[in-house]
Structure formats: C-alpha cells, structure tokens
Image (cartoon, rainbow, N blue to C red; front, side, top):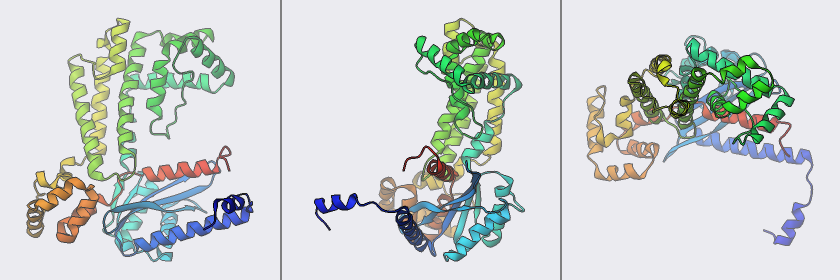
Length: 432
C-alpha cells in the first residue's frame, strides 16, 4: 500500500512487548477459528500426547487430521497446560472442553493415536476408553514408532553387557569437561573424522544407533585415550576382538533400525504405507538370520569389514547374533501382528482382490470402480487420500471404508515434533 521508502521508515518504529504479544494472540485466535470452522461436520482423527518440559510444565498437545473436499488436512489443534495430575480423566476433560467450546462433535472422531502408556492406552480407564464412550466408532492406534522402539529394546545378556560398557565409556568422557577436551584433542591429533562421542538417551528414538556407530568409528581413539587415563579394564575391551565384533554388529543392526525409524517419521503417513515398511523389515530379519546360519555376515557392513581386516573370524559370535536376530523378529511379530496384505485393496485396488468381508453391495462398487479406466488414470496422478476421497463421491461405500483406514494417524510424530518446538521456544538459547 505504501512505497518502499515509507515502508522502510515504518519498519524502524519499535513496538512494545505488549503490542507484539497481543498481535500474536490475535493471529493465533484467528488461525484457530479458521481451523475449527473447517472441521465442523467433518470426519477427523486425533493424535494426542502429554509431556513435561524443562520448566516442569506438563503439556497436552493434540494434532488433527480431517477430511476436506479433495484431500486429508493435518494441523495443530491445541497445546494446553495440565494444571493438576496428568490422569486419563484430566486429559479427557481438557479434550472434551475444547470440543464443546468450539462446536466439534465427538461422533465425527474416527481415530485416536497415542503412545502405549497406561494413561493413554488403557482399555478400561485410559484416554482411549473414555473417548470410545463418547465416540464408539473411534479406532485407537498405538504409535508405530513407539512400537518399533519397544520391539527393538530387548537385548541378550551378552549384547547388553557390550552396550553397558559403551555407555560407561561415553559417560566417562562426556560428563567431565576436561576429559571431553582431551579426547577431542586426541581425535584431532589422530586424524579422526569426528572429535566427540554422543550421549545415550533412552527417550530419543535414534540415540542408541548413533551412539554405537560413533563409538565403533572412534574405537581406536577411545582405546588410546583410556590407556592414557589408566582405565585399563575398559581399554582392554577395545582391544578384544570378540567385544569389537559384537560392537560392530550392534552398530549395524541399530543403524538399520534407525533407517526404519526415519522411514516411519514425517507428515501424511498412513497405516497402509507404514505396514509395508514394517513388513519389509520383518522379512529382512528373516533373511539376515538365514544368512547368519550359513556363516555369511555380508548383511552387516561394519561386522563384515572388521572381521576381514582384523583377521578374526566372526564364527565365534554368530550364535549370539543369530539369537538376537531371532528374538528381534519375534518381538516385531508380537508388536505388529496385523498382516500388511489386508491393506492391498486400498494401496492398489486395480491389482488386488476385494477383501472377503466385503458385502455384496461393496463388492459390486469395487468391481465398478476397478473397471473404470478414467479412475485408473486418476489413481496414478493423485495421492492415495486424494484418490479415495474422489472415489467416495461416486462409490460411497468402498470410498468411505478406504478413507476410514487412511484417516487415523499411524504415529505420534507430530506431537513429538510439537514438543520439540515448544522446548525450542522456551530454551534460554533461543533468540528473540
């Protein structure tokens, strides 16, 4: 509206903190009003989680995915302080009050995704049970990423001892500033690519794999440093070929788990997509176990390379590794019991058979849809959700059934990302 000279003059006029805060609140309220107005009378799914931040504030955060005229839309619904104890009743009260205040109907809620904590997942008194009382058709989903973390958590005593030794070494170096500086100088002197080890945190999905990979990469630098510090007992571990082979294997297998974890993260993730990723990884575990039975370690790069360069055969550790792979596969089958083939008709309806539980009317519509050449062309040009929302207008029964599978969140990734954003905003290191 103004010329550049006038605009530049306006930019230098300072605003008070109160004015800035008021404008931020006005913008926030307007965005919230727009979102809730779009959601009214629309089917939606929730992603909910609670956490305590660095200021000891307990927060409940909720994201929503809802059906629009052409696709599925994801957005932050709210982030609220929990004033009292974070019980299921208190969390539901916050959710219910918000829904009532903004005119949203529980009957339109078709999915709730949370972690596996009893407060959230309890079938009798958990949040999912309270939501199902007011929305019986809501489908509860246990976050796929949390299930993957639980499935990969268990280790045999032999491998767990290796991990414990690694954590002890990392803590010895990282918790003492002087030791950390001396280790960094040693790494630079020895020409290492990295100059620090990483802390291990159980609360972070990728932590274990990154810590093990970094320690294996700096194994020689760590051995020399521990010898200089007269930590001979730990230093001897990094001179032991069997210990290093187990460490190499752990860095490999948790690196592969990290790759899977990253594939499960992100926006617009649906159950059929992630079921494919989990199914592929489970099949890989079966293949890795079979190749280990044959004495072949090529699937594990660090282990195979170390065994070749050190001249120490991997035969002695293969039984331990085979046991872990078998156990890992069993846990994945436990936490992911559903067969991904059940979603074939949603992922690729033109090359899949209709499910056995289709009614005759649904199967009639499925045949009509898959015989429509224009829909076949549309399938390749649109995203999965866009395609099925379009199908719903012409073939409502199977379209609605497919959208009901795609609508629920598969992970609580957005909640975790939201908590990270809150932590960044509250951080003392954040800039104005």
